[in-house]
Length: 115
Image (cartoon, rainbow, N blue to C red):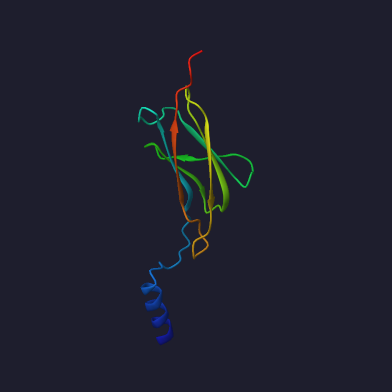
């Protein structure tokens, strides 16, 4: 029992939170337009290591969650009616517990040119 108490104390001093079974977001994202507003009708999809596209979850406030505890190179594509499509990639690695260390991407969509 004393060894466990020492381990817990050292763990706390190291600034590491204890591991949990909760699942974390792999990539959070925000989408705005060049005029600073939230892109109406926007949709985000993501793929991991070139795999098939999956939908991101919309929090209805301009923020999105893409993947949960998925690791690797994550490509996120943002689309909105009347705006250019944009894709960004980031690499998500595991934290000390094996969960995704959340990364954040910010999208700034430009209006399509009128032709």
